[in-house]
Image 1 (cartoon, helix red, strand yellow):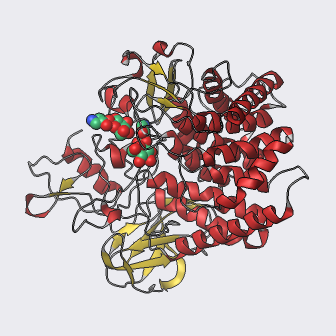
Image 2 (cartoon, helix red, strand yellow; image 1 turned 90 degrees about the horizontal axis):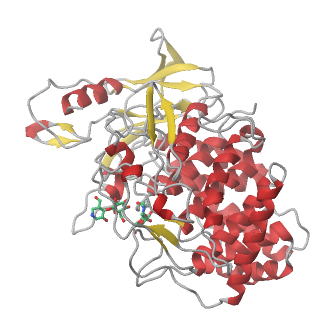
Image 3 (cartoon, protein in one colour; image 1 turned 60 degrees about the horizontal axis):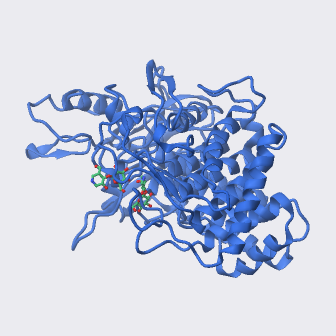
Length: 570
Ligand code: 9MR
Ligand code: 9MR
């Protein structure tokens, strides 16, 4: 698509005047600005462009002088909230986006279902959004298609907004390690990150089963007795089971030596791929997630549940026999995830495994291992593939078993409440609703979504404060769907002005204009140097920008968790 058309689209979506189509070409994701420069398209009002469920906080942000606002109905432009001109919020200095004066408008009390936009006097009109109980149903389906589209091995095909996406059978060269999801914009499969993503999806099942179990997902077999949501999880589990060696150790990854070129479809990715030796990090993450999966699958597919449980126990035995860490490979494979000369410690992975093995089997040795290691871990606000301890803590806190040490339970309960209330306070104060405040890093959109897990877990353990914890979950979704510096949805195919050029090989290679839908891009990564620009501004919708515009399963999985939390009860 030409930049002119893109500009027209971005600008009309944003209800924003578009300058005439000058004959100037701009890099992807940017539009012609003053003085012949290219810049990100600017929006005036930053709001979730998907919308809100009734009862949730509803906030929008603008960077301009103080002004009054009204909420208008899309159908007839009638002002529906508040009674007169809405109050002016205090001026905030948004340090991470470098905006000296921003204001927040609050229309949380508007709970009548409908389609609306924000109109701020002298600033402009926002993109439209919806207030409805089921506002997150479509984004949830999109995010699940994201996972389905990542399937490796088998062919996939699905439709989204009138376009058919798909790829052929692929990666036969994986030999025994067939199946599972590709990791990200690349086609590697990494046991650590693959287990981590699945672990978050399984937690969503545990927490929101009533909302998930009757949802029919595109591309899945509705007649096999397994709820589609779990079926997608089982696809990834099937691959993980294939990664285990006979001695119980689990291969760290299966990848080519170098990343494929960008314009390569999965079925054209035919370079040899190697299955790495076992690492204790991979083995521990595998033990954890296989044990967890066996609990979730037990009533639907007892055979698979047994297989997963036996595999988890074999992995656990391997860990007990190998107390000295066996690191991920130093070279010969793609991807980070703790590989290389500075290996990521396996202690958090073993800790997660101990919790899941205990919960699945009641094994007292696993309980002791967890509780003895407990002092080294707390509930972290910021966590990712290299720090999976939270997953173990959440399982331990929700344990249906009796043998836990009450002192450890209390310590983690307090840590969880403390972390979740900090996240909630930070989100409420940040002008764009970020629970992580001023923290930015690779994959930050995924990390922001991931704060939802601690927030929801806290709402379950500490129901008295559930309202403020869950408000922060809603603020994270709002941030990712448009209440951010760019005023754009960060999920392909969803909301207003979403990314069009993710670093995602199938989107680049398939010759189809729109990118594959339901994929959360990484988000702003701080620049380095003497006077770096404000971190919130450091994202470009550019397919070459893998630091900020890639997509990945460990970012989509917590998005799915947050969306599942926000689905209506059937
Ligand atoms: O495409 C690769 C992406 O999936 C990875 O996340 C990223 C970091 O490991 O690396 C990308 O590959 C780039 C490589 O590292 C350096 N040369 C350019 C490659 C793609 O443009
Ligand atoms: O998500 C990973 C991020 O935390 C690391 O900082 C980064 C560089 O090491 O690598 C990211 O993981 C990439 C992985 O190495 C290969 N597949 C794509 C992942 C997402 O970019």
